[in-house]
Image 1 (cartoon, rainbow, N blue to C red):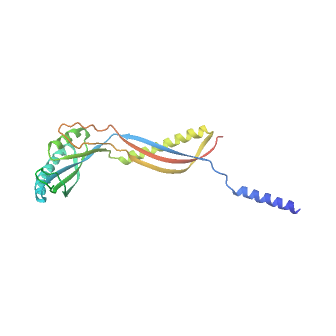
Image 2: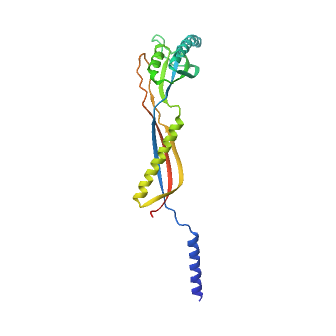
Image 3: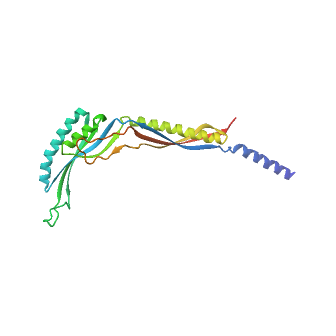
Length: 232
């Protein structure tokens, strides 16, 4: 009797444990990636006015005239819908500057630099803008970068494509495994970014030909986890 009672008690405990232990959920987790391409709206670039001199006074005196000439040249670009977004000035001493052979020691060189950040909103006139800047004879042009006005919208569109891509993959996997997707359990946001589009233009010359890209690529990534169930 004692053995029978013990066996019955063990069976009851086992049954209670089975009822309280949840069944293991089956799921599938997929990484999706989305891409969109958007035509650029504008170009932005930096131009430097650099003046060198053997003394602080010489560099600043010469630079005042060159900066005034540069400002006038940039005002004339308003007809091409070019805006000066911001400007900055710095004065630095550069040691070890090259000197004539007759001088044994290199003297320090002073350099005055005014940097203008420009935004060209009319891409069809970009070649005319670059040519006008080069023709002024006072600018050094840096890399040209292209952008769009509503970048957040492009990134969101890439995110939507990433979700579609993840679901398509998950459906293929589930169908091949003989199951189907149920509700979403988790979503992990990934990297969403503008992949960039720029061109090197260190030495601009008059009548230069710059070709803006047809589109700017955007990419987004996401990880989604679905519960999977047996097909009916």
